[in-house]
Length: 178
Picture 1 (cartoon, rainbow, N blue to C red):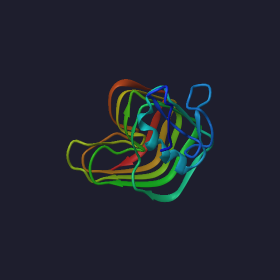
Picture 2 (picture 1 turned 135 degrees about the vertical axis):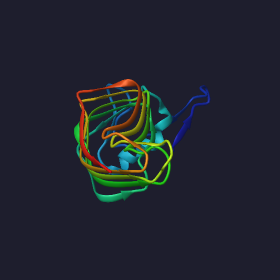
Picture 3 (picture 1 turned 90 degrees about the vertical axis):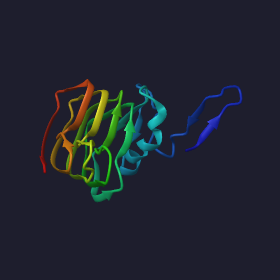
């Protein structure tokens, strides 16, 4: 993180210029995500809160990469802008699993997840879903997951593994779960 501390204010702010293509993280000027690394940088901004906004500029092609993890937690607004994250694999030994493991007070809209494999080897009370393993007080709208494989030993949902509060609207998933 680049942290700037103003001596007249105790608040610290992140410098996003090296993490995203552009934007200020506001509704009028969301952080713009143009590639896989910028998408994965959402992890670094997890603590910025539910008012932080992000938008996908185009489809993100992962070229079959094995990702070490998805985004562990997200609480902002992500607008896929009709684009998809595609062609990737994530394997996890324990805990919730999804492109975002846990949504907390988040809004996800207009986002596709396609041609993927998620493997969760946890045999306890974890949840697995293509978009999110667990979504708490979150809204998912006009989003989808398709042409994917979820290999799990515990609880799974094709789009979201577990939804507590919030809503899923105008969204669908067509994946294989084993």
